[in-house]
Length: 167
Image 1 (cartoon, rainbow, N blue to C red):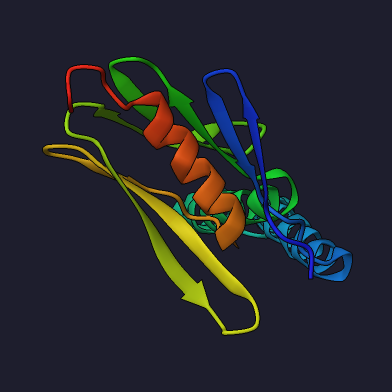
Image 2: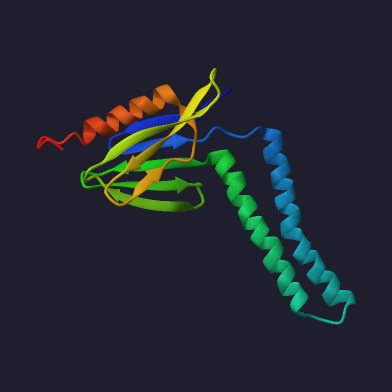
């Protein structure tokens, strides 16, 4: 089983998602194509053979393209999705990157920063996620990653924010 990968470069930590199987991605792309074409086809037939434009056409675009946008996000996340943690001296930023757009932007201060590994998965395949907590806010990663890599990431964050003044 291919795992998510963690890459550390400078102040940027990237957790890349494993790709979904090709068959599943192809099926999702076909469904997305159908959702895009349904309102266009309905518009053509209603304007050609029907009574002219009406509110149903707009509703079909809204519903089909709304579902299509959500499905596009799912396809991108399962193909090229990654989480980016930027470790600045005074704050940590989190972004879910879908290549075409970014979402889930969060920031926390590094004051009284605590890190925690959330254990998930089965006994023979231990996976987990990372939780960063400050005074008021917290950030949780979404992608499950091997515990060994999360411990390495956890140690990197603790080392980086181990303050000389005792905090």
